[in-house]
Image (cartoon, rainbow, N blue to C red; front, side, top):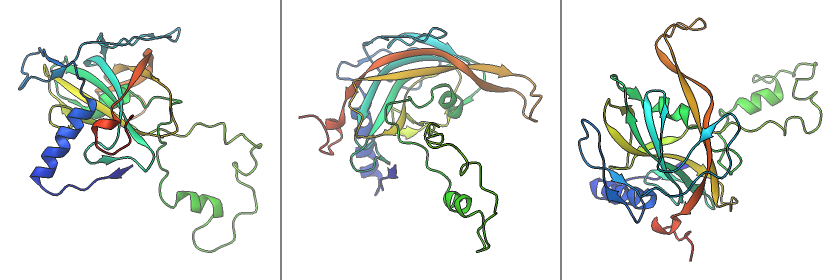
Length: 261
């Protein structure tokens, strides 16, 4: 996923409008509530529903709020678009966005990474895997980086049965989280404020499905950690909510020529 360059306030303004246009719904209404809300955000008429739910998980239903750790989260819609401001997909790919209204119901500010850990990348729908660290594969293949002969003993990967490595699913990246109101990256959720955000990943253009499986992981509060020196944090647990939501195609709104005719 590449990052498009911006060239000043005017371009930034146009890119901001592009983000809002790409992830917002045609039938939006202004209906935001919540103490301390600085400005009204775009809300939507709920649509879509889950079609199948894992036995251990409650359903994710578009327009219905769920409690996730310090947040109330309402998934609004799932959209595929072209480039979103500084987020530019590789040729042939597009961006996948899960749009949600999020309220920090606690008394303390919360990092956006906490929300990101609760809503992982959808699986099995062509989300582009996380790139490995540069140079790591080369060193692992040769067994050395100084020109010496590699170890005589075969590595674990070399001794694996054919197809064993292929069975491992690639690691998917965390979402880039953008505030829909002003198309900027969001780092902190302030207490009592409702934000409409888009959690964004790059998705392969080979995916042609019309539904996206959205999972929401439960968050457990840890007062004291026995494994690390960190205390007082939210720890991701098991999948608590799951649902297949309809995928809306908004690629024609980004002006990249990849939209439906």
